[in-house]
Image 1 (cartoon, helix red, strand yellow):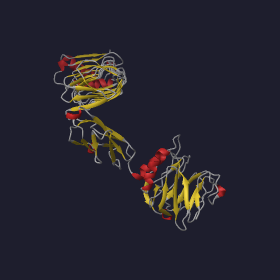
Image 2 (cartoon, helix red, strand yellow):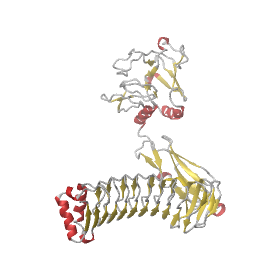
Image 3 (cartoon, rainbow, N blue to C red):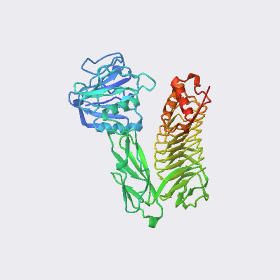
Image 4 (spheres, rainbow, N blue to C red):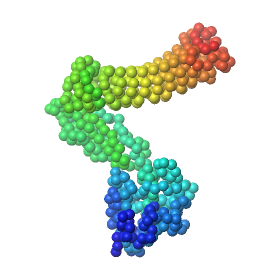
Length: 534
């Protein structure tokens, strides 16, 4: 019995010496002809024993077509193959990134794998899967499209067909491989998240963290997770994601660690900071160095980059070197003010009171899902802001912010957010968004007072409840103005209406519809005010 080693440098070990100068496209064998107990995988090779009278073919790109209609076919790739019987076969996977070897091996041992190597192929084929009894095949109308720089494939794997061979390694890209693996193994995990990214858990208590992990997409097939603790002497986590606090605050003072969840599929992670006192919360941030100053009304402690924990005094500076810091705060605090602090990058906290980060010019992402009041004026580097529970939100001058959603805010001030193109504030009764020069449509269904002056790109506005409306210097169309006035005449007290529809490129009255002019006259006749372009 010979070992057919298909490594490129060992060209004399296989029977088909005549075609060793051609680049292999793939390998073919019947599922039933492989002794699956003998399969060996490592990051570069696959090796297995063929059964008696088994067939194995190495396929080359050399303008010879060995297949008939009962075998995989190609429309634009010619191939050549040869046959082995009762031999051991070894072939390379060397064009795969070794970083993916563990994934490949795991799938292979689960008897499902397709390997796609790097070669431009443009054609269609019935895909047969290494280790799966019964090959998956393309729908008849689906072509294999590998045009484009990334050589990726979009395929529709429709059924199982046992009439086709069951080992087929197709030349292509790593991206295409992952796409096909997803088609065979189900919906892949893209990311995982959790709403409890900070916790206070007292000694002897537990928290069921694992059941709160959220998969994206929600219909991901493999939802298995592994868990770890950065310091099991402080808190442990079991295979179900239950966190147990082992550190006693009364004896140890403040101790905290990080609990991590990792998805089996894809190795996606999410974390939770856990402190050993249920009366406290904790969040981390990257500090630029200098004096750290915070205002608060209950206890707060600063954890410096070297691990030193200092009890803070409200509005009193504490020298702190640059690096990753933590703030341990008493949950009874009603407000925490971090104005002007050199916080770099992301700040993420579950603090549930009033949070102020005004003038934090290096802050790029702010997530405060439980804050009821939020100020972040002048955070000029802020590109992502999440405060879904804030009833008052003030983020004027955040010039890098492109999208803002404030679903619970009844008072919203975002003037001067010059990059803002999307704004959602469905509950806001007071909305100031003047000088948001990139905003094009705006809907403010509950706003009674709205200032969007200087919004030079604003063409469409819906504010059916507004009695005070300043759109001076905007770009409202005649159609939008007509809609605004039609809503206004339905309000109960027209004498309170004060509209500024003048300046900028707002449509002049000569372009308005007759109905819009009539509605304007009704409002003025009832004592209201409407300013407009002549």
